[in-house]
Amino acid sequence: MPGPSDAHLPFPEAALRAPKGSAWRAWQIAPSARSVSLADLSPAAKPFSGGDKAADKTAVESLATQIDELQELFYADARYRLLVVLQGMDTSGKDGTLRGVFSRTSPLGVHTVGWKAPTEPERARDYLWRIHQRVPANGEIVLFNRSHYEDVLVPVVNHWITPEQTEQRYAHINDFERLLAETGTVILKFMLHISRDEQRERLQERVDDPRKHWKFSHGDLEVRKQWDDYQRAYEQLLAKTSTDWAPWTVVPADSKTHRNLMIATIVRDTLKALDLRYPPEDPSLKGLRID
Image (cartoon, rainbow, N blue to C red; front, side):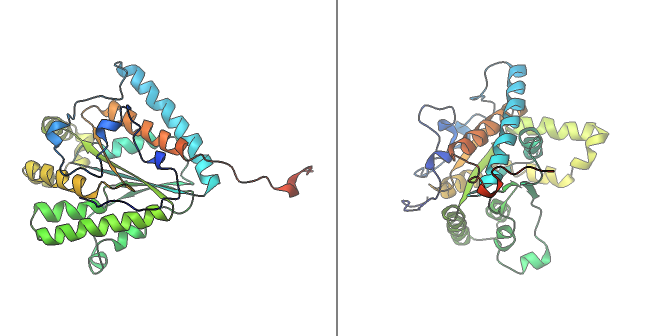
């Protein structure tokens, strides 16, 4: 569990904090949490839904447009950076979130990184080396499809590192994210929470549809056998790495539409909370007429 925070953030805390009474509040992991139980957080819940799927889809489209408009202002403002981390079990919807929430944004200032197993040159360095190279620059939004949290999931479940090494990595990650936050990076971390039954249906769909065979790997079935171990590993990392400067949000994701609605709403609200502004007018342009 992270200790008390004396972090000095250069952006409003409202960009990270779920307001009291909001639908977000119950799904954000408090930095003071001693433990997290995913069994107490239903993956079928729809806290952001209005109750009508068609209306929710329309809302997602509207939010995607708003995010696009705010992203242009974010890019022009250039005071901050935004890192969006998407973690979750196979088929939890990381790719679908990227398509649904960020489909309208300009590639000029929004970049996606899909993390795979480290290469040999990456293995020869510390595990955060490759991550640090891909974090956003001023005015940029970077979307992580998987992330550095794979390094406290796969090695933990497969017993490749000891409990002591795991605790050490939690501390490394917290310090790394604090460095990013204190130097202007807003970090939104989403754990896409699906049920085992929903994963079975989505994997079966990939098997049954030849157009989706490219998405399926037999290794997915081996990982599925470790479902309970991964749930415990997620519960542990959520409790250990939800900090004042980079809190976790669990997103109930059995509904693809709701998953996108929730994340899009939070991203929109985060960008609005930053009080973005265009740079000062250039006085040399006053009265200029183009021939």
